[in-house]
Picture 1 (cartoon, rainbow, N blue to C red):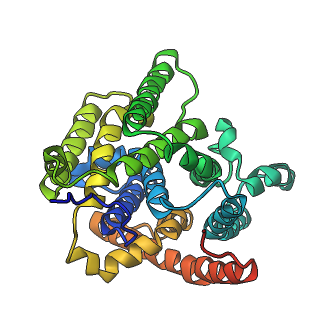
Picture 2 (cartoon, rainbow, N blue to C red; picture 1 turned 30 degrees about the horizontal axis):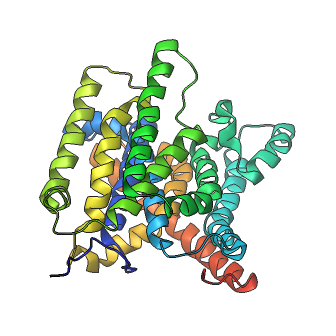
Amino acid sequence: MKKKQFLGKHTGHLTGLDIFRVWAAFTILMFHSISYAGCNYGILQPFIKMGAIFMTGFFMLSGYTLFYSYQDKNFTNIKNITLFYGKRAVAILPVYYVIAMLYILLLGKETYLQNIILAPVEILGIQSMFSSLFSVSHNDGTWFISCIISCYAVFPYIHICVKQLDKKIKLLLIIIFASVLFYSPLVVEIFNTMWIYDNPFFRILEFMIGVFLASITLNIEKEYILTRILFNKIAIVIEVVVMVAGVTVAYYLNISRDNYMLYSWICLPAFSLILPGLAYTEWKYIGKSRVLAFFSKISYCFFLAQYFVWPIIGLIKINNNIICIFYIFILCTIIACIFYYCIELPSKKYFIEKLKIKELE
């Protein structure tokens, strides 16, 4: 009997990755709501307070999704590389530039001269190369965009290499990358160095782990016992519970609460199982959910909309915790929709038609 493959050449939409994307986006919102609005999430409060760990999940998700989307593409062709960069730029830059300008005009505290000096850095998206810029202007959020630009820049070349490596070498590289990510926060902790949270080098490593995970798991045969054990709904629930419990216990033990990357010891292995598990598992009913599809679609704008949520919530001064959380969620969704339908969607259509950006060969 011919064995079935995990995903193989399948090119359909993976609902499980949407679930992860929305889950991560909501957790980041809740994480920020504790700092900016004093929200409380009861028994989940310690875990949500460490919600910054989901940025690791975002970078791994980006690598996993990109490899899945471009698994059959040929990046030895310079035309395909150019088209890839064009599509990525159209997807993230217009919204980024508009929101950066709005922030500078409405909320920025820098002088005109400082903004002029920072302009080339902001335009090129290289602010994450300067760790000390994290607290300047909007860079406490757009560092993420800066790092993802670095990831996109190296993806075609990573793709070429991955396609030529065998499974054992890929697993070895994942172990090496993970070891670096486990070791580096210890250096920060012991020697009290500048944190590496917004460092593009370490975020690229997370991104690459996502790429390698996708390249391996897309061809795991369903008949393998280990596959059936690891990649199913029950396993996913257990992995999530263990991760939440591990982070919560570490938080109560007061283990480096400000050194988020140190929590890679918990979240990196967890995300490495959860991501392919979600991708592998069939989600018949959830897959038809328009709500999930909607929030997955606006997730990028949902993340950036938070810049404008906190000043408004601060003016309203809501005393009830539940009502405050509700208002934050609704307000962020509304602002995200405005950015998505007024900026992201029209700009994508315009530039794709104007620049004649086609599908890769």
